Image 1: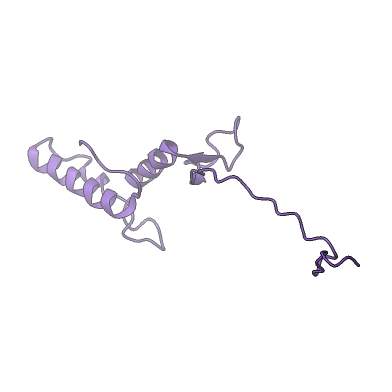
Image 2: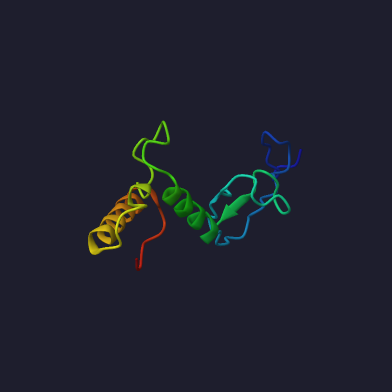
Length: 116
């Protein structure tokens, strides 16, 4: 064996070091498309969505769910059905606005309301 050769656990040659380029990876968050099975042509029953789609689907699900409908999250949702046959006055509009803002702030992550 030559004097300048090093011996390691891989044998006589040191392993070749391969370095990856430092690239900036964007973290993309995926979720299930809502409602399930709505887009059967592109993704099947469990179609994934991301970006603006996932936030739009989360808002749609929040607004269509009444509080108490979900067993593990009893406070999830908006009680918008109680405003269904109410008169169209300022108190009704303020109640709807309060209901949406409370639920949105608590359960929607990654978005904010610009205007109601």
